[in-house]
Image (cartoon, rainbow, N blue to C red; front, side, top):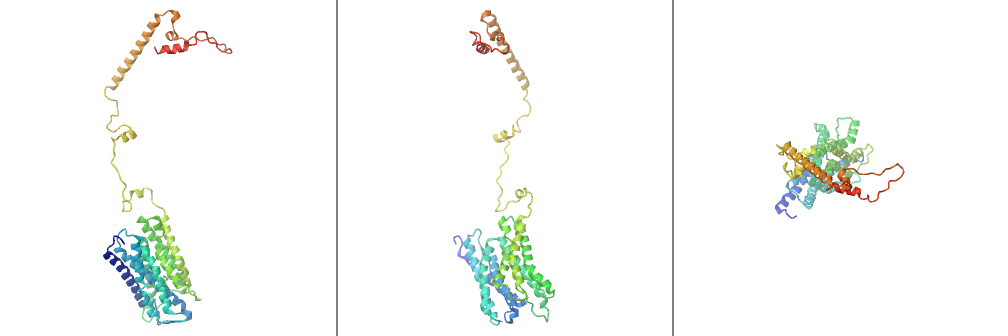
Length: 400
């Protein structure tokens, strides 16, 4: 990829392959040591479900190994790397997880299962798990919430397995058969164990989805990322049981956890969706939040109280006097008196000119009286001859 040196690629791909192979081998070694996986034995027809339960563990080990390799390789990935730079390490992590194939197929050569080729079946489950692990690794490289979900469910599943196998570690006790994601504690009553097989994985997925969703929401991830944050981890459990199968025993030893695993992915998404739609804080909380690299602060400018826009919007500026200027009242009084005097002089001049005219030459504008014809309320008034322009003459005379 452009912009990435050979040394960067070497570190990235080396971490993906090496950590994935190491994670798969470590989990297998722990499972062999605790008795979770026991391939070198004769499996009766009535106990075939126990054999199928171990296949779910093998597929899950391969998927989680690839995802763990991607999580560690993420530290070597440059920022803003293209999609291809993320997909190639995911594929390499899948090949690293495939290193468990010989580690599972070799012990399976000593197993005897009626009607089944143990070596082929174990190898096929490990290969399918490694192939699905490529997608889990890609999700871990792209999304932080996917990494949190996968790591949380991986740790929780191992804790449940350790609790289940702990009573059988006492001297003189036979190794217990532990199913993936099931609280198989031998000291508990069978009814309680059956209930635990049905509810352990959905409850674990629901709680983890809710918690991871709340963490993702607090980290201000997108709404889609928050709503899907509970999917990746439980999805690995679901796919592991899909690869292994539901079994066919009359006691439903494998069938009950199989259907529980089918609901685990939905329960995880339900929990994260609850976290996404949970009631949010007040509307002003987002504006008061500190800036982040994805949310830089908005540009701001200083107040300009003396600008033309501020004065037009807010009225007179703060420095403008609020009261009348000194002497303003006296000036207004003098101006008003001068206007009255000029008006009086104009009226007096017009009256003097009207007094010098003969009576027959007086105009309505000189006397201020308009002649009106008589009206009895029925007969329309008739205009007098020669008087059509009297009103216009009067109006015109006002302007002189």
